[in-house]
Image (cartoon, rainbow, N blue to C red; front, side):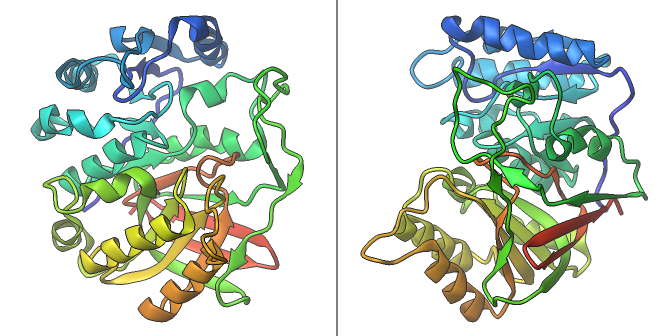
Length: 337
């Protein structure tokens, strides 16, 4: 049975950097993110790893893990939100105390999704794929991003409904942030491999495919064991997003996931909008979605609000979801059962 944490009103947020920390020249920007959260009624505690960054990581793997373990055990910390992702979170997994993981929300995306997926697979505790802390530093939150708080404040046994965004951000303009941080200028349009309406149901699992693919074959990527222990025969509904992979690297990664059994008992796949997906010899991401849908005989929805092209719907690893795509619009109902 999946275990769901709960975000208390006025909770204390623990900020640790299991992947990349914040370099000195960006400390003021990050302090703004913390102050915005405090203005929203939260308390913020930052660990030492947040303020350092060297050789593509915030700190050595054991130090990162020790700080994370400490925050997980800290009675006054209710939720953990890393500043952002990075590159080398996978180094710290072997030092995490998975036998003493308390039921606290961990929220983030990109490299943080390695931590999220590993925790849910090994413990059955739900984790939250959505905004990083730095994404919450605007004067206000856009409607899609703002749902993170409602989703994490949903109690076990209840459900939460989210809708696709109306517009998304094509590219970053860090020197000219809008009041909600993002520049939401492009019309959002969810698509399907079948070119018709789709309605998918299943237990959510997923993250950034660039990094979660490296859990395959490790003790932290036992999808089959998770299914047997926690899902009682239910199907998995995967959500995936691509940060930097070309079309052929994306294809190789998906084939590896298929051969590793990650797509066994899979009811469908959701793919986020991507800043990558660069074609190789006219081979496109759309070609891959169609091939994969045909091979696995499952529906695929793509260009959804997930990943490195904001804003983001908050997806809960382990939750039972019903996802509908029709006429370019999407609806995500998550049940905490």
